[in-house]
Figure 1: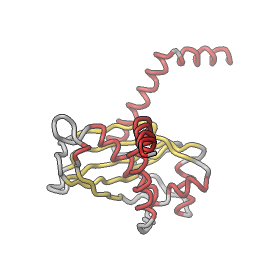
Figure 2 (figure 1 turned 45 degrees about the vertical axis):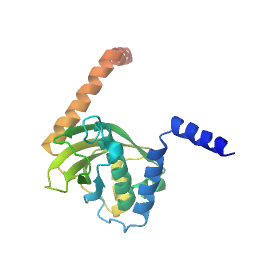
Figure 3 (figure 1 turned 90 degrees about the vertical axis):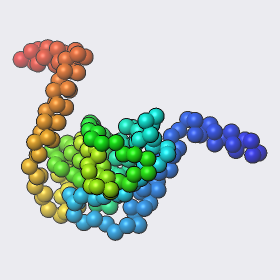
Figure 4 (figure 1 turned 30 degrees about the vertical axis):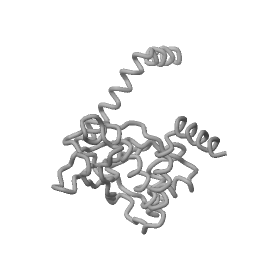
Length: 209
């Protein structure tokens, strides 16, 4: 019986990233019992520390771990400011449409950091989220990530209006965000051209004319 149980656990851990799902549940439960953040656009911070399973061969935080930590910080952020609740009410969901991370200084083993998350701006389809890894030792921003969070079956304006009970004006786009959005647009156009979609679209438009 014990061998069957161990075999089942081994199979489960070999087929699924079990720790990811368990950590996600813990983050959501913790956020559930914390007081809500009524200002939807307010920056929120979660504390972290570089542990042995975060390390790469060079002894500092693995590049992929930054993105993983950002996932959990967004779960926490959306739970506390009510966006997850609004999504359920609107029968909508969100997916990551794009993300870019810039590494400025390594986070070393045992180093404590704050991961700060905020919504910078939005358009008719997506929220643009910034996440910063800030060393607790000296306040240095070790890494910064931009994430395009696409809203499916609704839109950011409807979500914010539901939460704030009023129309919320979008802040001005920072210069770096404008450049990043331009990069995404240029990349999409180039990929469409490489896939032949642009030619098909153009041919269809000519035919419609």
